Image (cartoon, rainbow over all chains, first blue to last red; front, top):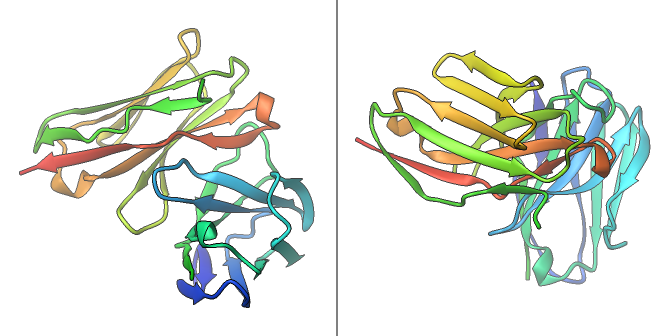
Length: 115
Length: 112
């Protein structure tokens, strides 16, 4: 595997389900990010982890819970979601922690549909 | 006022022509600027980064930055149908704690 991988690629869940999204980066990077991309809206930053420590929670509802067990893996745990949470969820990584010149590289995303 | 603004398009360009995309930003303290290409149903792919005023060329792509006027542009020379995608401008905004802020993207259609 190379780059940033995400599983599953597609997920359909009911509002009462609990599921998790997984991201793995094979680039030796030190920072990882979760973004949400909804139709007709710009990419929205959700969470930032730098050196396995959460450095940003961008006012995300508590029904989204991130976990970063090590610098290569990032999870997004989902529970009691709403239909408006349906979106493309993107993971990204960067060599350096958030800073002026860090380039972020994205995984393929998980297309989430909440029924 | 949006922090990063782009014309949503679509920008229709004949094959072989130059596509010109613009992006304006509001935070004067912004230091780095990125262009991503996103094909329909796919994730964003980094194609250019620029940090200093002036032009930066990479193959058929040229990024132009003017910090005084707070805009960054992307030129695609010899446009090909495979360039048809949405192009996202991203700005590292000091006011946002040095995190990337994305524009809404410009959709480009290259017609054979």
